[in-house]
Image (cartoon, helix red, strand yellow):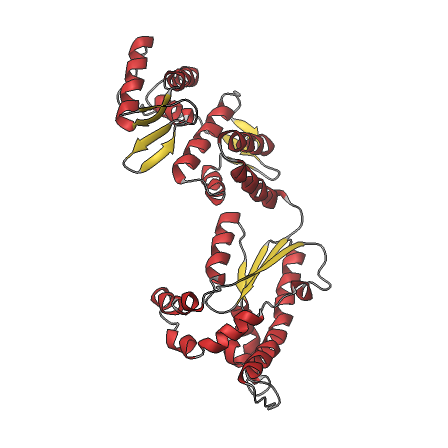
Amino acid sequence: MAKKRGRGKLRVVSRHGRFPFQTGIVTAGLMRRGLNMEQAFDVSRQLRQRLFQREEITTAELGQELGDLLDELGVVVPQSPRVAEPELLQVRTAHRVQAFPRHVLLRDLAATGLDIAAGIALSNEVEFNLRRLGHLIVPQTLVDAEILRLVSQRCDQRYARRYRLIHWLRVVDTPVVILIGGATGTGKTTLAMELAFRLGIRVALSTDMIRETMRTILSAELVPGLHDHSFRGMLQGGQLLSDARERVLAGFRQQASQVAVGISGAINRARRENTHLIIEGTHLVPPFDRYLIGNSGFRAAGFVLTIQEQNLHRIRFPARAVRERRRDPSVYLESFQAVRWIHDYL
């Protein structure tokens, strides 16, 4: 049964979970069933007022309440959706006119941390409010302002803050470079891919790929350390160190220094092409400004991932091998102490 409430937002309980009640979803559903925009909006607004004292309501109860309200208002709504679709809403950007980018909006809202149901409800409400203006072509600035207004109004401020960041990445006129460092197995690649998708950044590189490219140019005879794993890089020139930890770190520092040339080159290319860029990899050693020398004209942020508990770090390698079958976990587990030395060094 539905619960009474004093304050707070009404939640709709379905078999998929609990979601905020949104007039936009009700309005869109009524429009699909044949009501015009003004009728649908008026009914959904009255339904919200009707349910003001409730804290939770099931989808079955919500359907019953909507049916009762329609009967009281004398509004006849066909049971099946009408075939005719509303005219296409379009958005004018700086470069072109395109269909209302619902898929991009949903991705951006998901990036803020909103669940799918809340994102769909907000996108429906944004589109509905824009249609009420009476124009089928609206400027992008108006779309952005309406999205931010609704996110700020409907959601916790932390979601609005994240959306402002995502929107800023869309409009900033200088490239943004994100550097993600950390030892092998700390989750750098996973995080980089998630950030690239959610922030709409099209280019994401790993320092392993940069190193692999350099290998094709520089032979193992010339730079042997570049051709081995970062956690067991060989010192060039046959240098010998008796301390195992110092030997590992010296080889790692040497390889990181060699790969740094390629990292700086990739950043410089992104600057020239005015493209946002994410680079992740073990070879990114703080301070990160060492890769930015002579590369002005962009904004950069960098951080290092860590796993403080060694056992949690160790069990990630077998788990990763399930997803990436070409990565033999034994290679990393046999050298796990070296991996941890580099982890603590970073």
